[in-house]
Length: 219
Image (cartoon, rainbow, N blue to C red; front, side, top):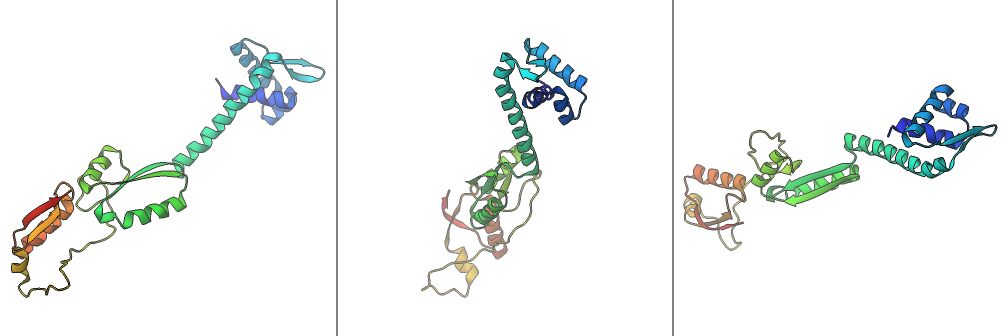
């Protein structure tokens, strides 16, 4: 249905005068009359009766007017929402984060929500590798991942983490740290759960000339 014809119909119905309606719609009265005639032919019924008292709705016109008003309202609502979606003030955003972003991601999401409350956000805890897969597939729009990222993804470095050696308070840090580390078993995430962290740990061991003795891997 041509919304222009519906708009002509509801305007004439409201003003009850073709001349006044034509002026409001910035068109000529003959052109408006033709639009109403086109609409009447399409629905197969007369919408107005014209006389000395102006244009009055027929029974068919009275029955169809609420539907025409609803369609126009929905059309205007669609246009408003389309503008909001296009401008980024409404829509949905799927975000992933992992251990490396567990502090940064919630703060960033809270700030985003305060600025764009109309956007629905889903936040999911995922390994960096899974986030990258979903980013490439398009099911995630943003991911807080550990570097490196695969080709095809744009990234912005937000922070730099350092590995820290943690020992019991009663344990003195040994003088021969390399030998001490080399002789201790290692508990770590599985490489599939944290490939970036695994690569970082392996790089550290390689720099020290050590060989990790993996006691347990956690998912």
